[in-house]
Length: 511
Image 1 (cartoon, rainbow, N blue to C red):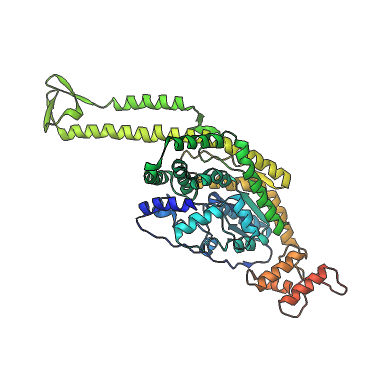
Image 2: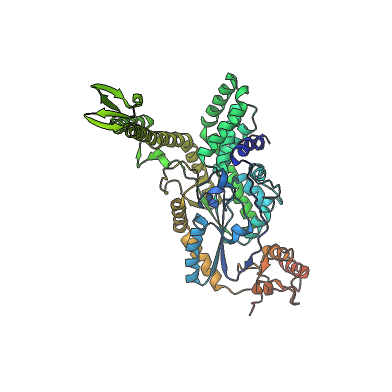
């Protein structure tokens, strides 16, 4: 894939030969009796990427949220919203006498399309994530075990939250550019790809300049025109762009329901990381107002400095003064003093430009650029929730603006998302927890949901294949023929029971 080649140009320049090793392997989890299981599906936002510290080329490969590994599953990102919401669930479970688990399956650089395929297809690796992460880590084996992990946790889930769709739109925009022969499109697409896997915007832009320098002798006026046309066409119809993303989110719902029809599903919409409703500093402004106000302030601040001095009754700009000392109003001052005045003026200008001109322009431009796409997608996600019977969680209108240029939410936003989940789901969770606390465990009810179904036969088969580990109560429930062992005979016995063979009886309560 062209994407891997062009990004490697920037990586080799910035990393200076540094390497990183990442690994992933199947997680073996013991299922507890009367346990409420929550699973979060999403991309790098859900994973909590960037919460462990600023992301640069030197740190992005070591971010603990980058890959689903045994280590991450056993030690999840505490500030990410699935863990925060998991804490709320634990409090509710303690009141009900039910144990709880919260598993974060957020997968960096994954689209909704990738999540759906990972659930349903053994060995599937996210197409873009696989190209990026395998190339960066130097390993082709990562991501291939995600199917096993997804299946294991989703099969036993009581609640699944889904926050996806943003990467489907971004990658629908960026990936065709990275595969393009147009060097302008190729460069911009590569920058977007780097941001998607967690690189900070400034470093990604620097990498883009390196890639552009690589192509500089090949760029023509037609390339620039083609790139401008591509941008215009892509963003001129937000509904067309968001339609595919929304359909892929629905495919995730279908995939979850296929393997676990009893799980409650919460569908979260997408917030605008550059500011919902184009707000900046608490009020809506257009670019002209920002520029005018900031430049006026810049002039006021800088011209407070003595940017000229009088020498022998002549006003001279500081930059012209080379003498070791000069006389100002009868006082002798050194050129070092004057140089410091110049430096102070430069630093003020630099701060004003970077913090009060550059950032607001980026912020508002990105808001106007991205916000119509997000609002279009969110309307479709809400409609999908109603159509499929999912619990809709409105994130877009209910989180604070972060006022930074990082596409990943900070810890405060993660807490706000967790609070929204708690408000939307408390009644549903409480009801299911109460049922778990009340019902007795039956022979054949291996997943402890209060009934005997084909899902229980599937769990026995997974236990025999060592994909999951049963606790003592579940082993008793799995011994459907009563011979003291859990083997293929129990699966056959359970299947005959479900098929209503004569003489096959189950349903006895375990003492």
